[in-house]
Image 1 (tube, protein in one colour):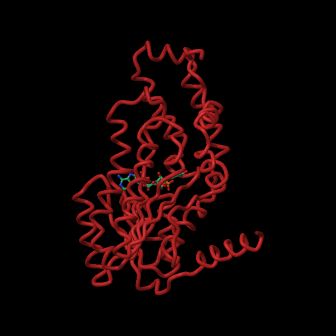
Image 2 (tube, rainbow, N blue to C red):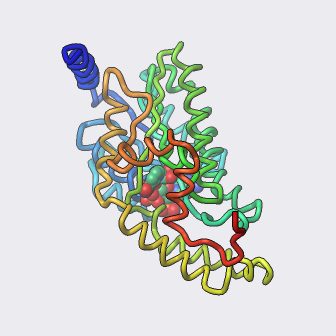
Image 3 (cartoon, protein in one colour):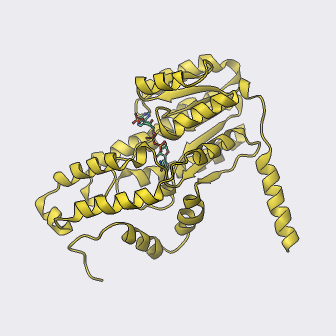
Amino acid sequence: MVCLHYSYFHICWCSDSYRIGGFSQKHVFITGCDSGFGNLLARQLDQKGFRVIAGCLTEKGAADLAAATSPRLKTLLLNVTDSASIRSVVEFVRREVGERGLWGLVNNAGRSVPIGPTEWMQLEDFAKVLDVNLIGVIDVTLQFLPLLKKAKGRVVNVASILGRLSLTGGGYCLSKWGVEAFSDSLRRDMQHFGIKVSIIEPGFFKTGVTSVDLINADLKRLWARLPQDVKDSYGATYLDDYIRMQGFSMNILCSPDISKVTWCMEHALTAQHPRTRYGAGWDAKFFWIPLSYLPSFVSDFVVNVLLPSPKDKASS
Ligand SMILES: NC(=O)c1ccc[n+]([C@@H]2O[C@H](COP(=O)([O-])OP(=O)(O)OC[C@H]3O[C@@H](n4cnc5c(N)ncnc54)[C@H](OP(=O)(O)O)[C@@H]3O)[C@@H](O)[C@H]2O)c1
């Protein structure tokens, strides 16, 4: 039995460690490179010799990245919610890659706010997040598919452990569940053409999307527009309690070492046999993903520990 286990892990380890070569002939396009995972991945792949084309939302983000990398790396402005912007980026990439096609597409761009209690949201709050994190991913992928087919390339989609466990209201968890489902169908449909699709499921990391200042400022906006009777049902101190407890949890949960995530992205682009799913970070691997398999009363309990209860809580 021990021998069988050893052989299984040995085979997995060997298959995991075979890498592709010829990085200098391979183009990778990454969205959301102004900051966070996308920015680090662009720099990391550039150092390895890949031909990186980095999509940035802002001119400043693009200029800072270009200044920190080799002349091989090209930056482009891209807003993933704008189909025309995607089309012109695809045209640029088509000219760059020529007959080789595009080796890697990393759908990384994302936003978290508005995020918070479901009752505080309006329809457009959901749409703001879904447009970037889900519809943007679908639009970018569909427009790049012909170039990916040419190279028998890779698609790397950044989901989240919040695509396994819906821990909070707003569009974020929905969008990441959507990315999981889109990536699964894409993988099954495109395997026939040699395209491999991987999903990255990071735990909590200190970046723009987990910035408590940004999240708190938006929570205050959501609270301010609530009707008085809704505010009363939560209680006068609820917003402050929510902000305090969420800040406390995020401070403990968020890891500053974002290279754990970019290591997974790099593996998905360079391994002979990339994995379908990468849990990135110890919290994802050993807490959140296992928790997602447990009965929902267990994850409900965890959320109740992390966040306050409203004043008018119904007794069960
Ligand atoms: N940090 C975490 O704990 C965590 C966990 C799980 C999954 N993720 C996912 O990881 C990905 C990268 O996020 P991150 O953590 O590295 O945070 P980040 O530093 O905020 O990176 C997200 C990037 O996407 C850009 N962006 C936002 N809206 C865009 C749009 N419409 N078009 C193009 N780019 C846009 C942002 O630009 P601006 O900064 O200019 O807005 C930013 O550069 C996201 O998909 C996020 O959901 C993060």
